Amino acid sequence: MRAIEQMLSATPNRVVDRRLLEDCIEVCVECELTCTGCIDACLGEKDIDPLRKCIRLNQDCADACSLTARILARQFGGDREFVDALLEACIRACTACGTECQSHASRHEHCRICAETCRRCEAQCRILLRALRSVP
Amino acid sequence: MRAIEQMLSATPNRVVDRRLLEDCIEVCVECELTCTGCIDACLGEKDIDPLRKCIRLNQDCADACSLTARILARQFGGDREFVDALLEACIRACTACGTECQSHASRHEHCRICAETCRRCEAQCRILLRALRSVP
Amino acid sequence: MRAIEQMLSATPNRVVDRRLLEDCIEVCVECELTCTGCIDACLGEKDIDPLRKCIRLNQDCADACSLTARILARQFGGDREFVDALLEACIRACTACGTECQSHASRHEHCRICAETCRRCEAQCRILLRALRSVP
Amino acid sequence: MRAIEQMLSATPNRVVDRRLLEDCIEVCVECELTCTGCIDACLGEKDIDPLRKCIRLNQDCADACSLTARILARQFGGDREFVDALLEACIRACTACGTECQSHASRHEHCRICAETCRRCEAQCRILLRALRSVP
Image (cartoon, rainbow over all chains, first blue to last red; front, top):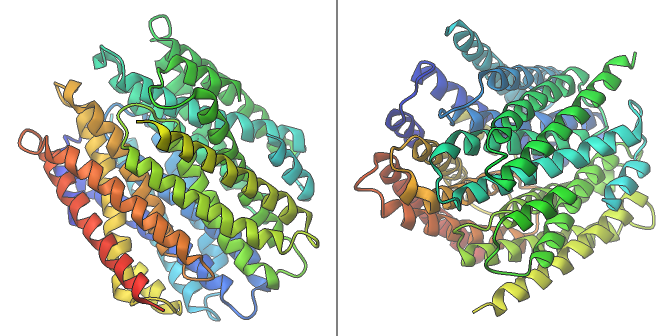
């Protein structure tokens, strides 16, 4: 997403490496939309019964990732403790959703894709959280 | 909000006292909209200069409270660790925003109202978090 | 929601009657959370099969109402054509979701409550839209 | 965003060309985050005074684009009139925000980037809307 890159370059970012931030924002957005798409695909499945919990956790994960992307796009005057706590919550949402989707991955391609995106998002949030915590 | 009450009554809630949940959802929504209104009032102030950080923290707090209300309205098949972590993040957003708004409370009525709502929201989230943690 | 009332009183609202605005914001928020709760209750129903479309439309309606409440809480420097178009979209989301929920109302109490809230939200948005359009 | 592509391929999309949908989702997300970044950069500007309306319209445009991306990622059982009305609202939000940002583009690089993204998003929404309307 070229415009996000340009925007982050135009904003003086005082806290953390711009590239780390960019990667985390991008994968959060991807995870939001993949989870939204996975709910949608679940609704279209013949046997929706075993996918109830998957739909629930996809909703939470989509919402958590959407919020995280938005907060990370803000650099001015934020509260570091809040950003840390939100990343923790987002990591947990991705773990829970990714685990559930993984359990359906062999039967449903959309769950396989979603599990993989959740894992990538979780990893990227952990990397950013570590980097933020190492800043004095 | 009568409809929320009715809806929570119609949904079997297995985890926590319905009244606690209801109160927390309602104050989260109130806090979301009060923060949104405080940004708006800040944008209309003659001297906007000292209110920049207030606008920033109001944005985060509005977004965090909106997400929290929505997650709390979901009872089926959720992940308890995620709900806990999100409540922690929401508490922190309310603390940061409330403290900033409080510092402008003597000059701006909208900041005084917003600080008070943030404090109520923070308190209610803490009560719910404690109740959730006491459930085996 | 007392805090919303206080906040709207503290903000000079140049365009439309404050009470109309307040009522519309409140029912939008109620509708967002009722739709969220209806999805949740659908996920817990024994026979989820006929409720797929209901879940889909509830998602859209919750998201549209959430956005509408937030936009209406902003008075400073907005674009009137956008507010009008958004109210039109919200009215349509409420109509579609309310009609679907109504068709399940005799079997599911949560759908009955949700249909009723969608109808109220639709009506209140229409009233506000008419008022906004009558402003020169 | 590779995962969105994969997800849309895994979901049978009955209504419109998958590529059109994908492009529109992607630019909506980009526009949401660019507007969020533009607010943030405005808050950091020495002379924030002339940027008040820009902040307001950026908020609306970010919220409208976020909702639109999410709705477009849903294919199952939606209401076509609602999708049309939402695209109309999103187009209007992009026009209003883009015009305002353009007026600051010579002084602020972030406004220039944001104006350009708003224009691209508006154009892509128009293309999709036309395609959707041509479907019987």
